Structure formats: structure tokens, C-alpha cells
Length: 148
Ligand SMILES: NC(=O)c1ccc[n+]([C@@H]2O[C@H](COP(=O)([O-])OP(=O)(O)OC[C@H]3O[C@@H](n4cnc5c(N)ncnc54)[C@H](OP(=O)(O)O)[C@@H]3O)[C@@H](O)[C@H]2O)c1
Image (cartoon, rainbow, N blue to C red):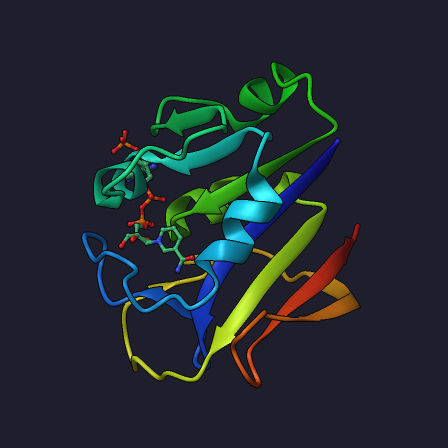
């Protein structure tokens, strides 16, 4: 199964200003919706609290610190699923990721929630696609495969 991290990030690698921040600056929500529609989406409990709407058409799996990423993933029957945040959840699922889909936004936060806070290992990536975000000039989603 493909396990795809999908995120909007700033040019300095942050996904939020702080843990309770809502991501109102993301410019690619339509792409997020199109790509995740029909697939399970896994998120941390903090991220769930920041969402103002349910993600209709997607099986939302909300995880907390007692859930084991491997067990959660083993229960999924789909051919792909998306890890949609936040940072702690990205780090916890990092071992199981097969792809990263990240849209780099023209912003610098200087501090905040990193894409992978406290990651204990490095990852080697291959860029497989640079997808232009429709109707957003010079905004691209970078799709990487993770080389394990
Ligand atoms: N830019 C983007 O694309 C994007 C996407 C998604 C989210 N976000 C943003 O990311 C932020 C939230 O990220 P986050 O990293 O703070 O939270 P998170 O990953 O959404 O959720 C926190 C997770 O970590 C667990 N946890 C908390 N303390 C822990 C500990 N000491 N040891 C192990 N697990 C622990 C929580 O479990 P418990 O429930 O047990 O505490 C929960 O599962 C929000 O501002 C959200 O808007 C941005």
C-alpha cells in the first residue's frame, strides 16, 4: 500500500505557526481534496481539532499517542492512504511512508510546527513529479518517492 504524506509547507519547512493554528494560508486545498477523495486519511488528534469541516468522502482516522502506526496501517484495505498531519503524526508514521506530496508556499514562519519534528533519521528522496497547482501561478506540489 502507498502511504502518502500530504502537506502544505512554508519555504522554511513549517506546517503551522503553532499546534493550534489553522492552516488558512494553504493555496492548494482543491488539489488536496481531489487527491485524497475516496481514500483513508490519517491525522493526529491536534489536527482534527483544527479542522472546521469534516473531510467528506474520506474515511477519517484520528490517531492519538496510544495508537501504533503499524496496527493502524495494517487495518486499511485500500491501495493507498494519506497521512495528513500534523508534525508529530508525520514523524510517528515516517518509517511507513512511501511518498511525500508537499506544496511549498511562498512564506517564512521562522518558527512553528516543523514537517518532521524530532525526526531521528534521515530520508533519501527521488523527485517524481512537480505538479503545477491549478490557477496558482508558480505554486507547485512536489511529489517524492522515499527510497528505503
Ligand atoms: N500545513 C499542513 O499541511 C498541515 C496539515 C495538518 C496539520 N497541520 C497543523 O499541524 C498542527 C498540529 O500538529 P501537531 O504536531 O501539533 O499535532 P498532530 O500530529 O496533529 O497531533 C498530535 C499527535 O501527537 C500525539 N502526542 C502528543 N504528545 C505526544 C507525546 N508526548 N508522545 C507521543 N505522542 C504525542 C497526540 O496524541 P494524544 O491525542 O494522545 O495527545 C496526537 O496523536 C496544527 O496547527 C495543524 O493545523 C498542518
